[in-house]
Amino acid sequence: MFASNPASAATRRRFLLASSLLLGLAPLASQAADAAYPAKPITLIVPYPAGGANDAVGRIVGQKMGEILKQSVIVDNRGGAGTTIGTALAAKAPGDGYTLVLGSLSSHAISPHLYRQPGYDAIKDFAPVGMIGEAPIVLEVATNSPFKDVKQVVEQAKKTPATLTYGSAGNGSPLHLSAELFKRAASVDMTHVPYKGGNAHTMDLMGGRIDMIFDTLTSATPLITSGKVRPLAVASTERLPELPNVPTFAESGYPNFVVNAWYALYAPAKTSPEVLAKLHQALNEALADADAKDRLTKLGVRSKASTQDELAKFTKAELDRYGSVISAIGLKID
Image (cartoon, rainbow, N blue to C red; front, side):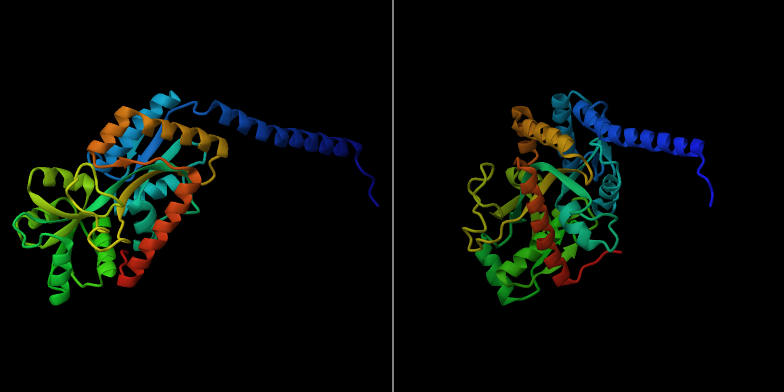
């Protein structure tokens, strides 16, 4: 048998004591950091290029939240690959509250199904902060189109299946999938004409080269008010103040066709409840600000606050909804 070494035993005891103290201090340090949050600028990843409506939403919300939190909110545009580049970057960021992401219909409901390796899990990798707002979908035709309402479109689509055309910004885009949802709701077959982003689909609509497009209120409003296109219906639960003479799809016979582009704020999954609560409060205060609300409205985005739990349930429902339609049409992007 070997005799124990008193010096070694004492060293081990000191090591264990020091380790215990450090372990005990770690939660206290974390709590102190949460209490002092935010102690430095916050980065808001916007998974879209600079200059568009999506970018504008992030900047409006980021600016107001920065004023409320008394820290700068720096917008970091990381567009590309159907929002997956920026969203995946946010998913891998530390959960300390200093990296957020502007989530959307694309990033958290469509791209996770569309791309074989999006680089993130829309549910597991994020903690919901809160909803920002919605932009209802509008069905538009050219001003010289023979179609005056949804009923006429459906009648023609059933009479001549697959001959009517609708354009979108590309395969798997929210506008493409909005039309696919309508085809299912109305039990009709129409032909998709995908464009490579931009406004080429809108130009071809006005030029009479395609029959219709499903567009967001954000993009549709200027074209409608200038008389360049004719709106047939809005996919909201009620008529819009901006378009009081345009009926809803429910009024047109399709009560379950409610489709919105939407925006929400998410943090990495391991962000503490205390920090999430501060962010949630700041976001809701920002959305209640008259200036922010007015600026969002001018973009065609109707501000809509939510609880964190409501956003979690909404995200899951949207993910399932668009997963179903993407699976049904067999759409994938490598």
